[in-house]
Length: 131
Image (cartoon, rainbow, N blue to C red; front, side, top):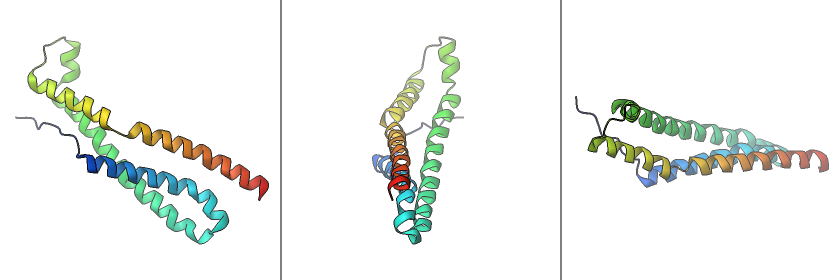
């Protein structure tokens, strides 16, 4: 049975889901401010955050699943552990895996989520103490 060569998603998909993840992160963290100044917007903003994260994490799940399947389908770990010479197809799959990791914006997304979370906590403490 011929294995399907994995491919990286086109840049517009990668950037699109990165943007969806960021919008969702901002939406959730902005609820702290919105609930204080415009409570009627809390529920719509929460839905934006939840629906965005559903799409974003479904996309991240598919990327992760595709990477794991490529490793399994081509037996890459076993070949490397046994020091088996890699065929051209194996090298192409390894290049796919490395390129996929390199092109991913997940590290930036996680950093932004971390920073926004800290800012949301600080904002809430400030608003609680001074307003």
